[in-house]
Image 1 (tube, rainbow, N blue to C red):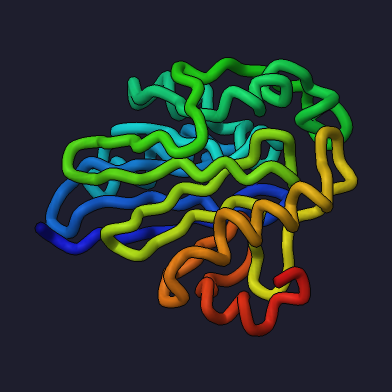
Image 2: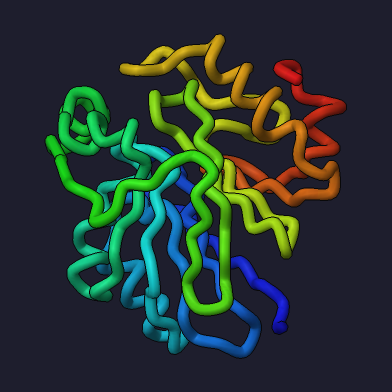
Length: 209
């Protein structure tokens, strides 16, 4: 099987990392967290010959979801989000769009659960629900390729903020200990903001480890 490749587009006022994953030599991508520019993302991918197979959301904050509806409309791809974060998608005050941008609400096409395996073509990932940053934050673990998309749960030497609606530091630390720091140390971590890291590095240098 061809190697899984990962691309990044950084967008929006919060410099959100938007990721797309695909098999080397193939054109269908899984897109994660389309920030605030769905049409721009669609056009940039189309320029490279890519088409969007699925849109995955790590959580429902505005800076990760504002481009989702436009990208869905243009690509025809379904949006996947956790059931627990449905409250964020539906409420512009809980997802903070009303405070930082224009009020924005949306619905996912499919609501996913902890431990669920999502498969698109020959790419599979496991849903790791990691509450803390939001009530239903999740990470996507591509076990075969040793890749973790961590959203705003885990950053390089830091973690996501917990002072916004539904956040909880105690739950976030528990998520790190029980869901992420048990993964192989060589697992590459791609966070929602900032630089890539690894599980091994974070276990050694992250103050929340």
